[in-house]
Image (cartoon, rainbow, N blue to C red):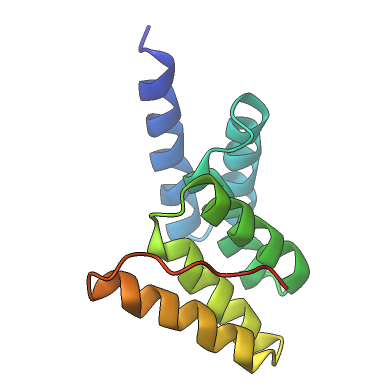
Length: 117
């Protein structure tokens, strides 16, 4: 039997695969199962943000992206997710801050803190 961290990685790969193959319900079920075991798993939180964003549940998407960012502040994908949701919510100043933080990370100046609204 694989070690727990390997099992989680395998389940995450399956969850992202389900999502990419057009099965968001299956992806969500896998991500939720992971989060029951590891509530702060940043990749599962990020995937839940994507799923909720795609479904138009912007407030839920925002919460998942923020939790993902808090669990792993070195992951710019969560910041990008926050920025995209803020654009869709027409919260432009917050979107700009999130995208600036991503650009700062990409340019090597580190992750800038992003305050939650």
